[in-house]
Length: 126
Image (cartoon, rainbow, N blue to C red; front, side):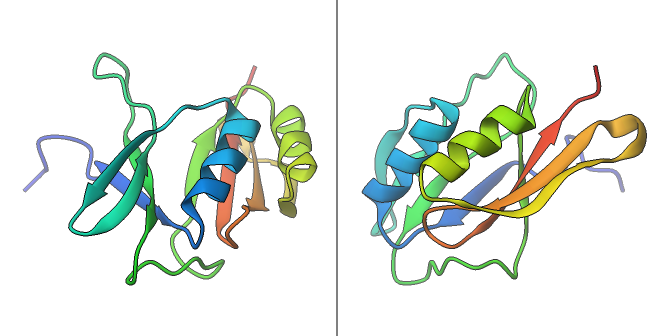
């Protein structure tokens, strides 16, 4: 049976220090966050606009959340991987996988965020 929508609807990125993580992602992507407490866990919700395609998620701090470079990889869209990666490095992140072409899909790269998570970037082809 086919699902009625795309299968992924939400994600959470584990963090140790929610404020530090919010500052990192704001500096890198210029995003603003909405703070929530969900089931006793502190969350910073990524921007979400119903009329746009794609999903959204949250930075999540709590006992069950442990940052890792070994789990699921979340890809964030960017119009320019080089500029975004420069912001990552300027704000304490580290490059894990340099900008690489992926055929007709554009380019990808990966970085370590302020909390120790592996996060990927995707740049659509021109």
